[in-house]
Image 1 (cartoon, each protein chain N blue to C red):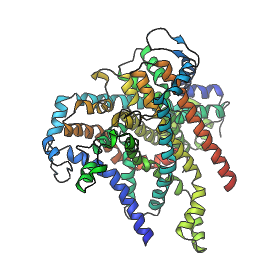
Image 2: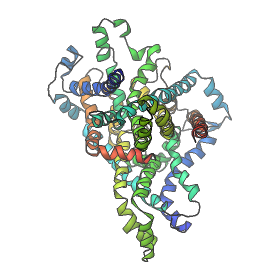
Image 3: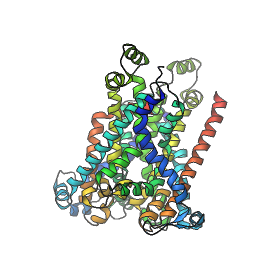
Image 4: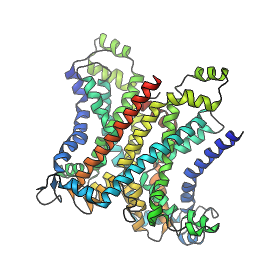
Length: 291
Length: 272
């Protein structure tokens, strides 16, 4: 590889470093001390030490947001990742129409989350939604009532459209699957290994990286997204569907608790980092096992 | 045999989950509201009445919102691409601090930027761009820079061989000439892929548009969508028409560039 002077390189990197500094490093540096103050964004900031953090963990709505965010990440990791891999394995054998399936499955990822959230809000609506309409028509009206407004079902209802993003998971897996040399499978075929056996012994160990990428993208989506609970339920009923970004959004715009919002932001970042650390640790263990 | 039936069952089931709500939305968006209420399953009444679309465009500044979204997504994309391209070029070379700077540019991919909504809001307000499309575009460009850099950078590594750079430098071209006349033209297809991604991301974003705009003049179509439940408490099929208008441009883009999006994604995350 050719070599250039660091000063020349920095010239080319300067605009990018400026943006990263302004939108990642500075906000981080600002948030840490600012989370120790009480502030409404207008009057003077008041030093409160760690009070914002003790307040947060003492509040039921924040604990609900934290728990629900963990559930979102858990579903993305433990449900969507295996399902995405399963679909990728089926499509990888190129059944008739595989290209059509791939296109349609990926479609939700390019549609705005806001419009999909609104669509599912209507789709699950008790008066006009076809889901409840069908349930009533086949005599199951007992479960056909107001999915989004009952504490028992609201979280599941907001999680339902999350399944649409399995198409992204699938695509990441497909990219890695096509990189596995065909000879591995041919050799296994000659040795008499079944399809399932080949998937477990050859494919699974070789898609580890795609698993990690998927799990991290999923978690990062869950910690940034506000649309589904915001539009479908406003986080209710009784905080049943609230998640960390939505909690912060309401604390900033409705309660005008800027210090508290930034404290919640720090907790979100620590939470995300801890999750990432665990994933990397597991990957390291897996690498040692499979070399 | 059972395995095969099960495979097709899974494929078709997921197809229904994705397509059924979208088809329901599309079909219902053509129905007059009264007719929609009399048969909520909608699929029984397919017709192509553009009445809802006409009244949405008449009663709401929908065209303005769509135009705002276009301006924000294109402006942020241009800024992002112009910043990412030279940065990706630098990483075709070895230089001091290279191993430190690369992670600095990509670590943002996994940072939950929702945590920064207050700093972003304060920064944009301070430079006088609150309630201004440029403020929103600037935040989009900054937040999605890691994505833009990663896409451009992976495509550049594939397209620009070290030998090209070496030959150019040996022929007496300066590093800057090499960038302008060798690397940038070769990296153009990759840069275009990045642009497609960035435009889609910008078109679809909600949170920062919600925080940074106040009036119609700076309201994007996604913000308008998020207010639809309140605006159309009873006239659902008009809301449906507005939703179709909001997703249509992206669907059209993806129909043309589906292959590029699909292959770009796998390459970007370094799996191909």
